[in-house]
Image 1 (tube, rainbow, N blue to C red):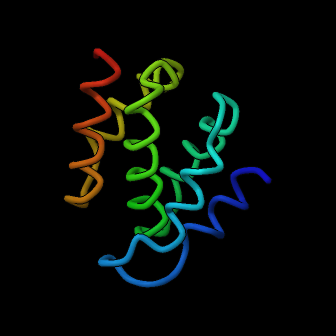
Image 2: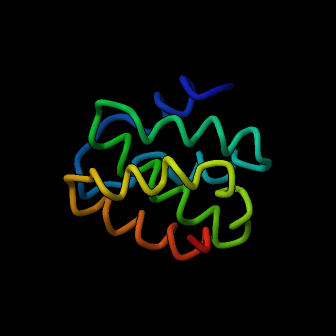
Length: 99
């Protein structure tokens, strides 16, 4: 159950749907799984990226410390984000990472 599994669960549907994000959220129970989910932010699939960002935002409500390993990438993503839904989620994460 690694990042490829997360990618598969986050695919499909349209931008108005959360797809299987709730299932992915329930699966992320430690730093290692969070790190695997983090890789989904670099997918070429806009839906996967949006849903991964949404799950990451929700997970970090309770575990903001899981972002610490990703602060540099978080800043780079925020600087280069083109899609508004990704920008919204990244803004929340930056606040939690205490950047």
